[in-house]
Length: 125
Image 1: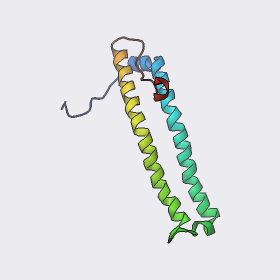
Image 2 (image 1 turned 30 degrees about the vertical axis):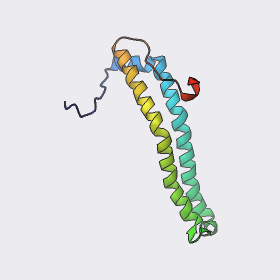
Image 3 (image 1 turned 180 degrees about the horizontal axis):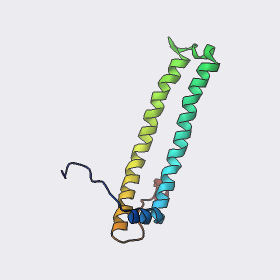
Image 4 (image 1 turned 120 degrees about the vertical axis):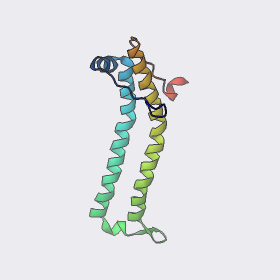
């Protein structure tokens, strides 16, 4: 395999069971859900609220908010901004999650019981 290609962790069923049972993996999954679930709920609510507003309040959506920019166009552009903001918030967390997951897999393969999950920034102080 070319060293420039990413290394993928191919786990056996027993290794997957050990990873899933590891307390640090369960903590990692909870930490990931604590960001992903509210982010998805917020994004979908914002997304569908935009279309609901278009359907039920079309007169408000054509109201200019700044020059020729209407409220509907501003909210549509806000969909893009929301996506990029959520991405910017998630990327540092994803790097931490990926590193912690790799540590857990390494520990399981080495026969350890626990992986290492770095503390959250609020827990470091």
